[in-house]
Image (cartoon, rainbow, N blue to C red; front, side, top):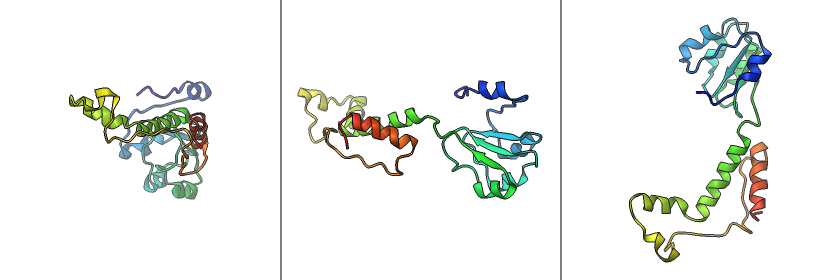
Length: 163
């Protein structure tokens, strides 16, 4: 879909074959003869990995997680697995902070009302019973810890005066 820039990969290796969409039944044939399988979000199951030819040495996920790759099967086959831990860090942190800010001012409810012509929340700048609260001084809980994205969310919310 053109959202990922493959130019560094293409400049680094002899052959790059790209498939925008693959049905699982096509994958084994498509990876035959290749050492690296570059994947973006398609589930790579244990059955699929066990059917990979011996040429495959690495499955590289073009994203942050491994949740769509059967790591046990890859280890059984001696196939390394890698990812891009900093993929979309800023975008994901921005999205998390945007959601916090949206919730703090009942923006979603106001937009929904406006979408159907309901202007009740636009009168005299009064939100009625909709919640509205300041973020400064509030404590944010980051479930999952302080990985790359979590650290960025912590920095951004700290800049808003949150703990």
